[in-house]
Amino acid sequence: MLRLTKKADYGLMALKYLAEHPDSVSVSAKDIADTYGIPPQLLAKVLQRLTKVGLLRSHAGMNGGYELSRAARTISAFEVIHAIDGPLFITSCTKGSKSCELEPSCTIKEPLARVNESIAGVLKSISIHDMAEDESTPGRVAEQPLVMLTSS
Amino acid sequence: MLRLTKKADYGLMALKYLAEHPDSVSVSAKDIADTYGIPPQLLAKVLQRLTKVGLLRSHAGMNGGYELSRAARTISAFEVIHAIDGPLFITSCTKGSKSCELEPSCTIKEPLARVNESIAGVLKSISIHDMAEDESTPGRVAEQPLVMLTSS
DNA sequence: TGAACTGCGACAAAAATAGTCCTATACTGA
DNA sequence: TCAGTATAGGACTATTTTTGTCGCAGTTCA
Ligand code: FES
Ligand code: FES
Image 1 (cartoon, chains in turn cyan, green, blue, red):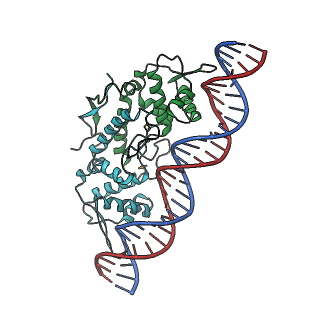
Image 2 (cartoon, rainbow over the protein chains, first blue to last red):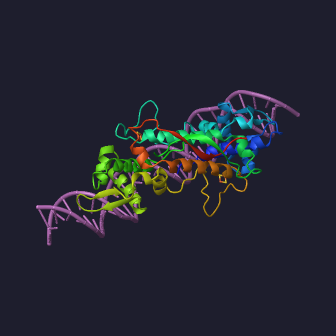
Image 3 (spheres, rainbow over the protein chains, first blue to last red):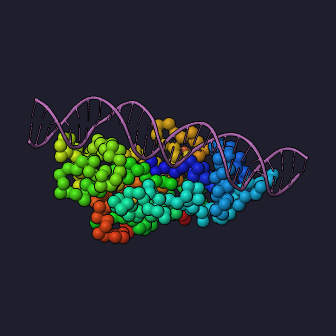
């Protein structure tokens, strides 16, 4: 439950890979797919989407591929997930234009919306750079104030 | 993305309802389902599961139903979600006995595990009581330190 | 030109969720 | 003690979401 989709996973993995290989000018979808053993065509779509939202720059043709369009530490996990999976809503009802079928009876949406914000905050606070350097600095945590719900 | 299942939603709604009606000794699944307009049989299953893990006490027969087995403020959203949807893993690979197919190549699990912890922490910090009293105290937030990831 | 790429749209397969049905069992009260 | 109301739970189906594939068009470069 509350799982990331594989597509989002793949996207994060790919960005992490790119962040770890700044030497390579551009890397093809196939290269990344091969090193991780994931479906090349599927990863290609993911990368295309990330390109579309501007997180990557693509280059067609031979020796083409992708490269980060921004520094790894300025790209948050939230951006990636949002680009691939769409808006992040923990509540089952997408609070778009038309509200949920359960309203007005369901009064649970409001409290959960705040939880949603907290989760988004956590996701926004971690960058691709953080993920890439993870192996070298295990358990790197620090306390920063985060607005959160509290009981009394 | 990252949505709660409807079952979990239903469960939270039901517990919230029970927390708001401490007067009623016990409320039937049908009563709750009717007031929220959700499938009675499905809610029944959810409540049965919550009973099984000890969050509710059930009472069969006429005028039977369910009641909270503990005070609302001692029941966290995390417990409810965990009971209904199982363990909370943001990563697509359940890190059970057998590890993911993508390992050892995929190195993304570790960083995300920490994100996972943060989310679980948020969910643990909000109680049914918090959700129930939500209408009266809009936007009630306070800062409490929460261990979280940080970029340099 | 042709090989190695990206960019899409449509599609098919698989898995997770949501919901229903049916039967058994427990309790209540008249 | 019997009828009615409720929980308990297994099996099953339907629906939706996710995952993956295919085919084709456009691009770049040697
Ligand atoms: S689930 Fe949509 S309003 Fe509660
Ligand atoms: S998704 Fe399973 S190890 Fe990364």
